[in-house]
View 1: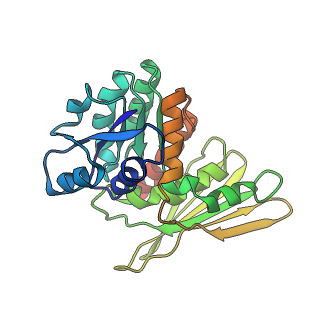
View 2: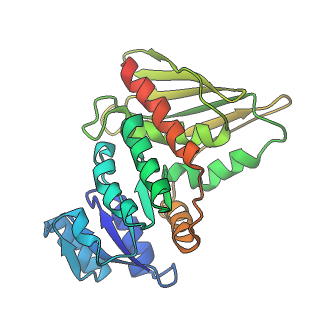
Length: 276
């Protein structure tokens, strides 16, 4: 499987190239091309991964790859970068967030459906072992879900979307169902979103970092009879579970996440952003 990467400024590209090309840990899947021109960053990634092809524009990859991974830090770029490949019917993994507006997210999903192109997008935190443990820790439907994490509304990479996607995506994995109106409360240091997903009350706490200081990611699930809570930790290979989910999708054409669930985090984050 020949895969191209678009948006190589993201450190996730290092993890992906390490897993596929350096450690060769995913069968025949390889990163064979990078978009963004012959920048020092791309040249370094190409040397590390023994990648021969560097192109200037994303669409220049079309004749050279079987699938693409889009890892731009700013989700506002994702629609323009994803559509040519979805229109061509190729499997596409859009790293978090899918988009920075519901309109863009819906356009990406609509293109995938129209051209039978398998699509997925998620926070890497959605797939880590601690999130899996929370999802299976308790019996019975969740009555409440609380997630917390760092996020900077002033981020140059899409504001609250850039890091806010992590606790929002985890919360919505734990709380299925349609999302209600989102009520956003702010202080000088926090943004808290309260809504329901199906029958579950959801609270997402986003805390502004102070320099290098930021809170860890955390999740809590409450059922009728019990409470489970744990810190959500990222190991050195935290991108691998989501990458493997994409590779399975590319081989089977079966998306690991329902398309309605790709839209829900964007809906929540767009509501939060509109309230700030």
